[in-house]
Image (tube, rainbow, N blue to C red; front, side):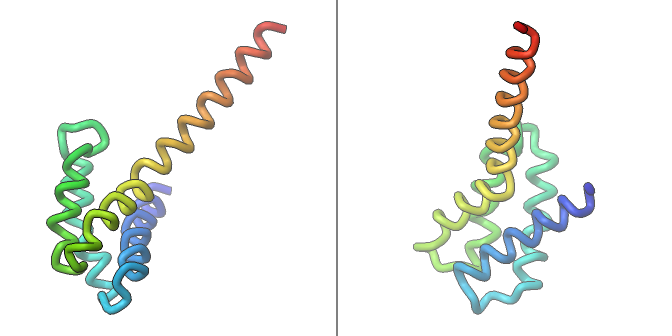
Length: 105
């Protein structure tokens, strides 16, 4: 499942990049993210905060026009990092309230 997660990280960015700029090579889109993902995973900030956004601007600046770059990076970070955190948070609170309700009975 770890390998599948890593592949999904790479493919989600490549598919999103293809949606923004169809002329970009799919393999180039996947390869351009590898160093950035390692930088995010190794950064000392929680969840690679800041590293992913600034690094995304640098990595994707050669692949996208400047007017698309900011929107792309924010959407890319949301899909690859924050969406799973939001879903996990909602699920956590659902289970927390469900267990608390069961304990009060």
